[in-house]
Image 1 (spheres, one colour):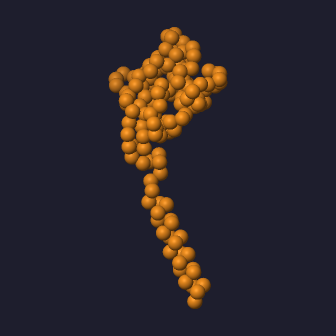
Image 2 (image 1 turned 45 degrees about the vertical axis):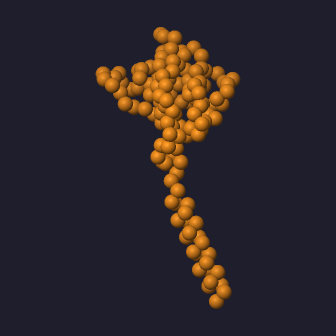
Image 3 (image 1 turned 180 degrees about the horizontal axis):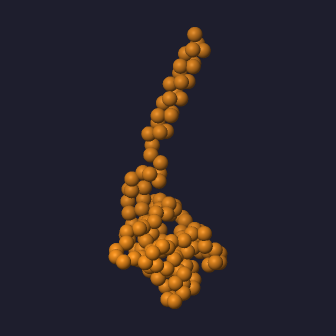
Length: 138
């Protein structure tokens, strides 16, 4: 009799834990809780530029928009400084066609507040190109 009671109690506790775990939304699909100010920053074509330029406390990601047809490339790293070469480019934001009107194509990059992007512009005909970003809290 005691073993049946233990099995039933174990089953109830297990089902309670499963229901509590599934009730909490995942961080990336949770609704946006707060936002930073939208910022336009010039990405250099010769040296790495840190994005975001300042950290919002509690940030869970940033939306990035590259209005130019030129690509912006780079990597994620420490927000204080980087000693990596600008030729390391695992991340790329680019447009596949030339825009004929306004574009709404922001990319969401889920990164914590202690991680930043180090970007460089591939537009070598100009010294820099602008991108827009906005930090979000979830």
